Image 1 (cartoon, helix red, strand yellow):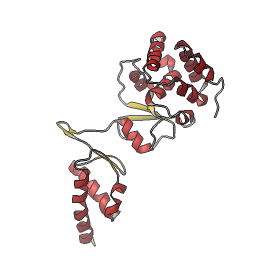
Image 2 (cartoon, one colour):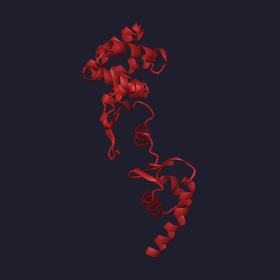
Image 3 (cartoon, rainbow, N blue to C red):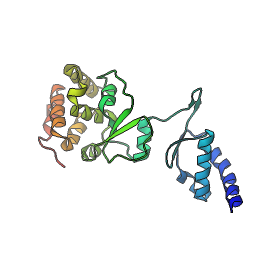
Image 4 (cartoon, rainbow, N blue to C red):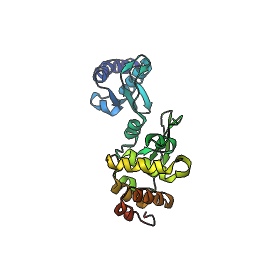
Length: 223
């Protein structure tokens, strides 16, 4: 029995190596369902990880990157979260990570922090923190970009992360002018945000000359 299993793994492993050799990206066991014998696929992937041919990010998720002088390249935390959650919008930086992304701070946090519009998933890689915003479904409905989520996060922690409100207003206005953020989407998403966030976003929109969008931010949150 063991010899048959070993033979199966030996036959599958070269096929897997050939498939991932020239295709940087994420890999899962189900990507090799056509090979049959899921146990052999799992073992072959585990062996490739041990040998340095794959990076294991969490159970059932691997990464094939470019080899550098410092080892295999690593995907961004944002890309990893997208793979884990299956979400393509509504995710963005939070806390000091948001302040850094928006140019409101030069402080680089030890761990990159993200806000997710769902419950926090398990098995996250090291160097990444997540805060759940599962009750704020407006972020998903409005299909917010990362920078738009960052502004909502900063609006909720304004006193902690904004030392120069006038500069923050200038950055917000510049982001609108460059079309990095869409004020109408932020206003729409604000319907499920806490009162402090809605007040700050309304103020930012008015300061940016977007009174019509500011008027669309509800006084009370809507679940």
